[in-house]
Amino acid sequence: MLREALPKIITPLPGPKAKAILDRRANAMPNAIRCIYPCVIERGEGAMFEDVDGNLFLDWIGGVGVLNIGYSNEKLIDAVKAQSEKYFHAMMNIVTHEGYIALAEKLNQIVPAKGDSKKTMLVNSGAEADENAVKIAKSYTGRPNIIVFSGAFHGRTAMTMAMTAKKAYAIGMGPFPDGVYRTEFPYLYRTPGDMSEAEAIAYYVNKLEQVFGEASPAEYVAAIVVEPVQGEGGFVPAPIEWVKAVRKICDDKGILFVADEVQTGFARSGRMFATEYWKEAGAAPDIVTTAKSIAGGLPISAVTARTEIMDKVTPGTIGGTYCGNAVACASALALIKVMEEEDYPAKARRISEKVMKVWNGWKDKYDVIGDVRGVGCMMGIEFVTDKASKTPNAKIVNAIVDYCIQKGLLLENAGTHGNVIRFLAPLCITDEQLDWGLAVYEEAINACM
Image (cartoon, rainbow, N blue to C red; front, side):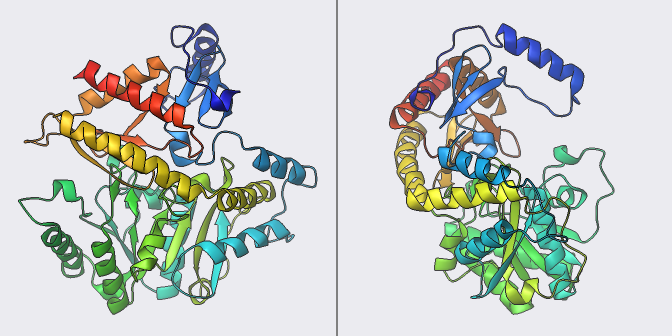
């Protein structure tokens, strides 16, 4: 069975069938939609996939956080089949379908947004969810501006490109929407000087407060938008004490606190949502956006907030044709049920404990590993030329990624300087696959130093 298998490369990569399809890709698709991996999927189960040439791969990227439940779960397949035999789509502005309502009810129950009474709107992608969160915050507060952070990634729409820090994702796309102001994210590994954690957090809180004097007065700020763990920024967690300080600033100044859980949601963090940690600390966000693993791979996303926020939105300003597609809703409901029944957050915690123990051993052993970090199973290793200088080392990251793909292990980089390797393996990965991947990963580090 593929889901229990280990990687096996039987042809040079890309194999002949994959090469033919990749040539077709080059002729049919824009070059701007890049892919560095020399394989073409034929089928997938669990954390494994087989390519068209019969090569078997272990995937530690998981569609960049989409496949927390794996490539093909039978209960999701059954739910999708059952719904598709009834109807594919019903636009909620025209004909109500119960799947949308059932999914909204479930998300209202489990998403840890601030407030007892909540409502959810469904859209189609992480970027759409983030942009609609901003629209909702502006509509509720009547204010025009938002604050985002260094290292942030929120999408590729016009608004979310403005919100995203790394402008490699937005070359030639300006001018961008106005009213987006940026300050420093608490990247503790790279805090300037020799500060304690408490001093560093105070430093980053002060940087946030400077925005009100130097960029936008607080009374014009609708929302502060934060990823609980930065994804493209290098898998950098937001420290809880800093989150609590941001929550207080928002409360004091009438600003909405928005959590972008597009990548951290649905068991990845060791909780169903990373903001459960925030809620336990008394710092629940006002608005939470979710996507990626919400439906096991079907395109759907959500924005959840308390009722008073949602019901103040100007009619006609949110919604869309495909929002809350019936088949995607069925898959999402099935996914949540499976994750709750099989305790996927516990799977994430167990995997994280094992991996972090190994990685911390590597950190002590290899001078090129500067930091290991993460929350639950959203983890990363930051590679440097040496520990003393902390100089980003993208060269070794690229070499490790290339080495591992030839062995059948998919890894992906992250970070502003491309010097972090992320871990987003499906949470249904077997112990044998995990051990195999860690062994190949360390083999690659030694080979590429």
